[in-house]
Amino acid sequence: MRRIAVLNQKGGVGKTTTTVNLAAALARAGHRACVLDLDPQAHATTHLGIEPDGSLPSIYDVLVSNKPIVDVRREIEANLSLVPSDINLAAAEVELAGVVGREVILREALAADSQAFDYLVMDCGPSLGVLTLNALAAADEVFIPLQPHFFALHGLSKLLETTSLVCKRINPKLKVTGVVICLYDSATKLAHEVVGDLKSFLDKSRGLNVPWADAKVFDTRIRRNIKLAECPSFGKSIFGYAPNCPGAVDYAALANEVMGAVHIEVEPAEVKTSAPEPAFAA
Ligand SMILES: Nc1ncnc2c1ncn2[C@@H]1O[C@H](COP(=O)(O)OP(=O)(O)OP(=O)(O)O)[C@@H](O)[C@H]1O
Ligand SMILES: [Mg+2]
Image (cartoon, rainbow, N blue to C red):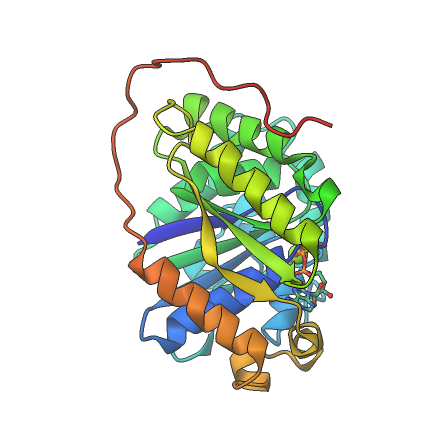
C-alpha cells in the first residue's frame, strides 16, 4: 500500500481537490483506494457525499477513542472508500495535548487494520499541528499541491523542514514524492517562473539526505477548471460529475503519473550533509 499525505499548510491550494479526485482516478483505474480525511473542515468528506454533522463515527473516534478504522470507514463507490472527518476533529488537537505518543496514533490504527488498499490518500488541513503530524507519521510519501503564484513558495521551507524533522524523529521512511501544480493558468508568466524556481530548488537538493532529495514537480498540471470547483457541492468526484471536462482529464493524467512513479523504499542513510537553507524563506 502506498500511503500518501497530501499536505501544504497554506490554505486553498488544492489539497482536498487533489486528494479526492486523485483517489477517484486511481479507483477508476482498478486500484483499491481509500481517502482519509484528517481535516476538521471535513471538505473531503463532503466532497464524497457524506454529511460531516458529527452524528456518525469518524477519524475523531479513531484518534481520541481508539475506535478501529474498520468501524469508521465507509465504501463510496467501487474501489473507493472513505475514512470521514467531522467537526469534532477540531477538538482533537486540544484533547490529545497530554497524550504520550499522540503523533503516531493513526499509524498504529492503520497497522491494526486488516483491510488492504493499494493507495491510502490522506487529506490534511491547512496547518502543521498534531493531525498533520499523524498523517506524516503514517505516510511514506508526501504530495504537495501548490498554486503557482509568488506567495505559494513562501512557507514551503517550513513545510519541508517539518517533513525533515518527522523523518528524523518519527518516520525515517518519509519521502516527498512531488509537487502537484494546481489551479494552473498556463497563460501567466508568473506560473512558469514559479515552476522554474521550484524545479531548480529541487534539483539542488539531489543527493542530500533530506526527504525531498528525489522529489519532482509532477509533469501533469491541474488547470483551473470551474467544474472542479462545482463538483464538491454535488458530493461527487469530478469523474462522477463531469467525466470529460479538463479537470477530469488532468486528474486522470496525474493518476497515470502516480501509478507509474517508482517509489523505492530505502533505509535512511547516515547524514552526509546538513539540510540546505530553507528554500523559499519569506
Ligand atoms: N483546478 C481547479 N480549478 C478550479 N477550482 C479549483 C481547482 N482546484 C481547487 N479549486 C477550488 O479552489 C478551492 C480550494 O481548493 P481545495 O479545497 O482543494 O484547497 P485546500 O488546499 O484543500 O484548502 P484548505 O486549505 O482550506 O483545506 C475550492 O473551492 C476548490 O473547489
Ligand atoms: Mg482542504
